Image (cartoon, rainbow, N blue to C red; front, top):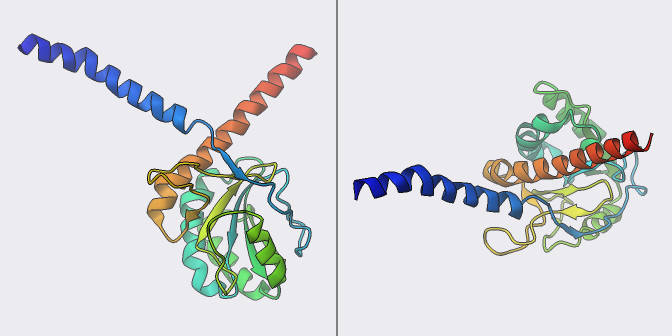
Amino acid sequence: MKKTVVLVVLFVLPLVVYLFFATGVTRFGILPALSGPVQELSAFEGSEKLEGNISILGFLGTDIENKKGVAFNLNQKIYKPYYEFKDFQVIMIVPKNSEVQVASLVEELSGFTDTSGWKFAYGEPEDIKSLFQSLETDLELGEDLSSPYVFILDKERMLRGRDEDEDGQTKYGFDATSVADLNNKMKDDVKIILAEYRRALKKNNKYKESAE
């Protein structure tokens, strides 16, 4: 009996653990495209673009001062680990004439990290609403043009997320007021999409080398 238990612990249990994690890697190896292409930012002030960038898109609304917690959570849990990745950006949508509030936010964020990857696009209320609607989610934009949720967009402006989360529901966005949601879910999903582009880049480089 003891020998059987020892054999199970030494050989069977490690195999079960391996299969469990291997299944998880397969399940989340590709981050599905849920909708898109999302509207480009041509109606907004500034030179920021979604096309060609891996973007974390958020909506800070009219009261940016009271949304700093959202920005700080996002900065610490998502932006800082990945901001050095080429073409990665956090882009916040704000109403026009919010420059003073934005400058205050950036100044505070700069005390924690390099903020060169933080971008802000300024728009009219109707343009902000239209952009949010183009995400085609089951979420709603607040009356102050803000949302606690942030979204992952790929270089083709497709919204990436989980077509079946743990609760069986489609996960379009991540609650930036929740450190747990950012740390336990969004961080993994951003890692997946960045790895996807790394693999594609390596594949293209190998193809070019073989063609030369």
